[in-house]
Image 1 (tube, rainbow, N blue to C red):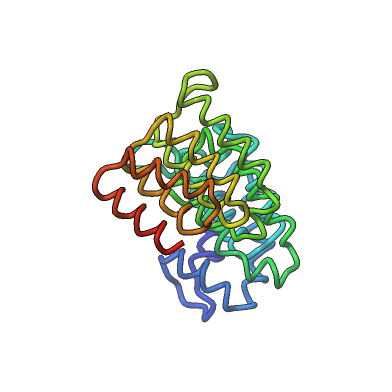
Image 2 (image 1 turned 90 degrees about the horizontal axis):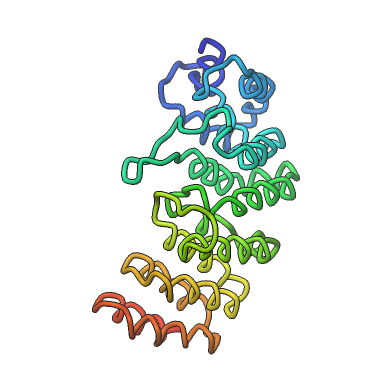
Length: 259
């Protein structure tokens, strides 16, 4: 822990602090964060270090747009439950791992740093790795909102394949259904797709909502209606109005009116 105290327990004015987030986000404004990168890579790569320490090092490196952080995200996604820090963070509502959700946030926060360090391609690859497990791992409503349009365009095929696999889990024809709200998470991915392809977004959202038109999933799906005025999206809106409760009907009607 002594190494991590020096790396993430001391601010950029050499003052001790217990606010790790302040250090990580402070690094976005302080070029001095680069001096801490080798040490953080060493902690993250140390198989004898506690999982929490390795995870915090990965979050910092990822937020700072470092290739090592992005590669570690990819490797964690491939490893799944065998990731060295899996279950270090557990969601209170669903009692499932939430480390992937926090890694997704770190990816989202790294956009400007990735452009500065010319690691955008590695960032996109890390997002791709997370998208590919979004039918089995929990992302706390984060992943769909964290991808910008350029990233979404690169990952349209991956997103569609993930949603289709997830639909298989919802219907019992595919993998084992996870213990979180998978339907809403898949709808959130469809909302991201609407940034780039309204027709595909409508198809993906419709396939989920026809199986599981829960209030939460329908409310999240309204975002698709806001982002595209394609005829297919308007048909999705009509379906949502037909099956939704009063709140959903009002939200969908307003979205169709302003789209």
